[in-house]
Amino acid sequence: MDWLTDKVSFAIAVLFYGISMVYSVFLWRKGFRQDNRVNYFLLLGAAVFHTTAMIKRGFSLERCPVNNLFEATMFVTWTMVATYLVLGIWSRLRFLGAFASPVLFCIGIFALMPGLDLRGTEPEFGGGLSSAHATFILLSYGAFGLSSIAGIMYVTQEHDLKYHKLRAVLSLLPPMERLEKVMKWLLISGFILLTIGLAQSPFLLKQKFNVYFTNDPKLIWSIIVWAIYLTLILMHARFAQTGRRFAWGAIGTFAFVLLTFWGINLLSPAHN
Amino acid sequence: MPIVVIGLSHHSSPVTIRERFAFAETIIPEALQKIRASGIAEEAVILSTCNRVEIYVSTNLKDRDASTALQNFLVEHHNYRDELNGEIYALSEPKSLEHLFKVAAGLDSMVLGETEILGQLKRAYDLALQHKHTGSRLNKAFQKAFNVAKQIRTETNIQRGSVSVGSVAVELAEKIFTSLSERQVMVIGAGETSEKTARALLSRGAHSILVSNRSHERAVALAAELDGRAVQFDEWVNEFPKIDIVISSTAAPHYVLDRAKLEPMMKFRKNRSLLLIDIAVPRDIEPEVNFLENVYLYNIDDLQAIADDYLKQRREEIARCEKIISDKVKGAFTVSNDMKYFPSPDSIATASQ
Image (tube, rainbow over the protein chains, first blue to last red):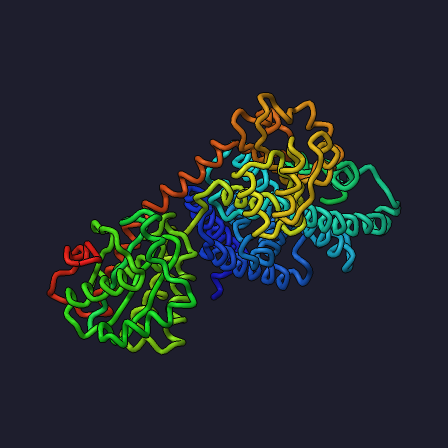
């Protein structure tokens, strides 16, 4: 099984995401009318190979595999699929997978691009603190990602209900209230994880640069992302910005993260 | 011993005749005893609902003799003196079994695919079983019917969806709210359809009902029936912050609720989701409110369109259901070569002869 390297395992996982994505199109065309476990098991199969890839990479590095863009991307998508597999145990949330698989496939394809998996010298931050920092932050992005997927489900269902589409009634998508609750709790979980991850930054900066704060682009960007999610949560809790606005907020913010994460990372001296 | 069925249903006779042949549950055991004591049948089950009266028997007699005897019994038991013109049908195997399976699956019901009939059939069978009026033939047939109904429910969409306006409203509510148990419903205008819709919501666990009507007495009466509370017609707006579902069916010629009125009220509700069911013609609720966030407005045409679509889907499933039934009938019982279906004989058309 020497051929089954970490990269190959991850590629097989991405292949499963692709198959799941195609299958999801059929589910969507059928209006999500029947509880279908096939997609769940496709994503479970993908998760097995995905986890294998991460374990292999981790053992080969003898540390948590969060040291370059490829590993970071792999970690974020792993968080998303792992969280989905837990939520998908409840049949009414299982269709999250149909919405998640296209996102997972696209991010996975991106991660497999050459040039992302650069293995240079030893990471400049030593010890478990660096791994913990990266892990918490990437876990948070996984939670934000799944929250945005729940948001996509929400706006889809909301559109169908508003325009009196029959599939709104026929489908087995979860009720709007439940979707909003799932979005909220995933956002809050992600926010807590992001806060913990960011809270470790000063200590890492002290270790490397002997300062507690620097105007590193990625640090600034992370604080902005943290502030946006905090605003979203407060607007939802205190100012009754619920429903469609909340969903679009979750979708838009994660889209912003997806589109800027890798570029900002390359601009960051502290992370290169 | 073939299984024979005779009876009347909404297909063959109007309610004015069906009600003359209905059996009260308390007298069914005695009627079954009479059928068996008279030698017509070894085993018997009587099914009597608002849409059908049927007697299923397993008999040693020839099919035609058994059906004649059963029809005579039916007419004499209910002392029916008027003329009959084919209202009573009679079926023998395998048609009798097909009919039983179709009845169990709701394929012969007034509302295609309805599920209440299965419970009624089970009760009828249990009653006969308790009083020892069934044997191996009817036991096997009815158990098979229940299994077929379950298979059809699982493998087809014949029972999927709601075909009445009230139950469509409930489905919509369940698409928006996780649970109806904490939901407050307001009925504005105490009409028949809004009452049915409110009842449907209550049956699925809606928390409480407020009723508001121009005639406060009517509101109080309806509220009492629904175990709710009446509200003066010019004060219903004050209750809005607590309401999750509104059913409106007033006779007002203008909009009772428009966007300008609703938008500020949503703030008091902290933008919680609101389902508006407008059953009135002319409409009570301005269509523009549907574009407010977290507000979902459905009028009578929207609900009826959904109900019609569901009915259409059920009709499309009939062929699949009939295939399942046909396979089960072939597999379970031998097919008799005798005539399978025949109308009621002329000899019992006039009971006085």
